[in-house]
Length: 66
Image (cartoon, rainbow, N blue to C red):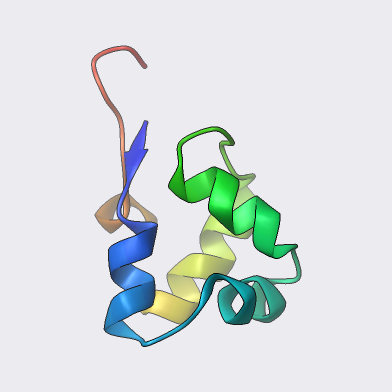
């Protein structure tokens, strides 16, 4: 799976720490998601969807490996 979380954060001018605090995780979790080392839970993805005001599949996309 690939994602555009870093781009979405930049659009809203949010740091990793600010996004993390808004959804209740650590900054390291956001870093791991952006680096594709961690796949977030449905709950976290939906929280991001609310913050970015976009459907989840606009910032998370499946790859052929998925």
